[in-house]
Amino acid sequence: MSRRFVKVYRPEYTNPAIGCPTLHLELRMWLLAMDRMQRGGHAPLGSGELQAILTNDKGEPYSAGRYRQARLSLIKAGQLAPSASARCLLVPHGVASMDAKSAQKREECATHKHNIAWDDAHGDWMFRTMDEARRWEAECDNIARGGSVFPPASWAREVRERASQGVNRLKPSAA
Ligand SMILES: [Zn+2]
Image 1 (cartoon, rainbow, N blue to C red):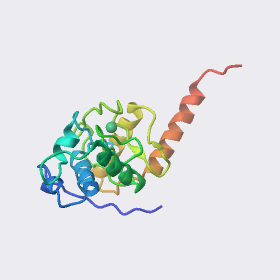
Image 2 (cartoon, rainbow, N blue to C red):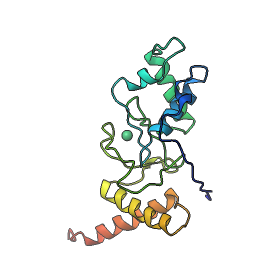
Image 3 (tube, rainbow, N blue to C red):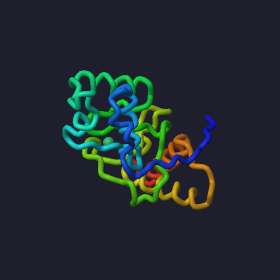
Image 4 (spheres, helix red, strand yellow):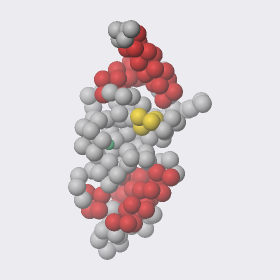
């Protein structure tokens, strides 16, 4: 699969369209995910924050079912990861990924307990451990500094498989 990589600059302040009740809730929820997205695609929200930000034209929250319905529509459309919730609007790696230094734009995701990206092409987490994820991010930072294209998730999977084979070889034989 070939991908074209473009850089998207988003303002540091919150996108005002998130609060615009004339837009579909699905679109606003996705804009909120983009707004909150950290490196690894996690978009953490505080308790009740989703309901406080995405309100109807009277400034009141929608029903719990309406938020769930919007989230499921976005998951079905592949724009949020299957484990996205009201506390983390997880964006799959194939949809958007963040190019930033490892130490920046990172917030520990309280919901998923890690910041590993969701690999939508394979329906699995991109890495097994945070250490692997950090090594991958450092590699991406090096590539970005060299001016090359951002590597796709399939490359990350190859790196992961090579690493796990290396670990297996190091394991003492059971025989
Ligand atoms: Zn998360």
